[in-house]
Each structure stands twice: as C-alpha cells, then as structure tokens.
Amino acid sequence: MPFARRTAALALAAALGGLAAPASPAHAAPRPGPQTPSVLLLTVDDGAGVRATVLTCGPTGGLHPDPVTACRLVARVNGDLDALDVDGAPCTSQYAPVVARAAGFWQNHPISYTRTFANPCLMHRSTATLFTF
Image (tube, rainbow, N blue to C red; front, side, top):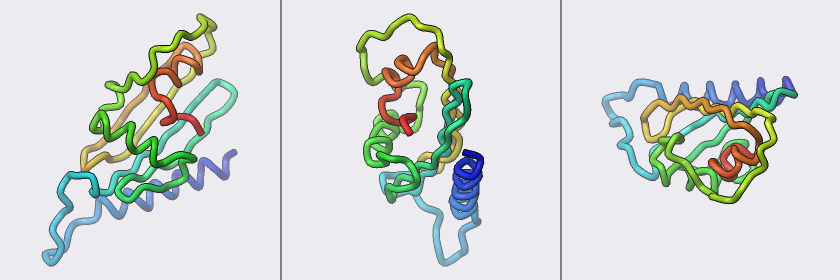
C-alpha cells in the first residue's frame, strides 16, 4: 500500500507541476472547458488504511479504475464535489466512518474536498464511483 500511495502522490505532483508551469509567450494559458486538463488526487480512509488514486480528465485517464464515469460525475457538478448526491437508495445505520478526500485542480480551479461519511454505503450513495477504487 505505501508504494501505491507514493506512486499516486508522485503522479499527482508531476501532473500538477505541468498545470502550474507558467505559460510561455508563445502558448496562452488553457481556458476552462471540457478539454482543460484536470487532475485530482482521491483518497479514502476507512480506519483500516488509506487508499489513493489519481484521476485525470481532459484527457481522461489516471490510475482510477473507471475514469470516464468519475470524470462525468465531477463535470456534472463542475468540480463542486459537495454538490454530488447521486443515489437516493437506503443505507443501514451502521457506524463505520469513512473519510473521502480530493485535492487538485478542476478546469484551472483548485479543489480541496474532505467529507466524513458514517459508512461506506453513504459514501457510495453520495459519490457513486468517484471514491470506488
């Protein structure tokens, strides 16, 4: 697991370094839009350990197992992950807290998201496949 987290962190750092580089006079800064590179480091802490992955959108890719669906979810709320509420299905009242985090850039806007869900079902209900890895 530590190798996977370190790899994801290095991939995010490399991707963010490319996004944060100053534009040369010959190249204008990218405009926000569907093809603007977006990179998110996603982590889930379920108390037993932390899992991490990198999601890139515009072009779609990264280490996320379903980047197409995850990018569509984030695009639907224009990077405002607090606005995600995907599924109204019922969940048990079991208490097994899960902390979901996202950090990076969406369409040139910084993203910093942290939310604690009472259990994995509630996390999945709110975020669908975004934090499923």
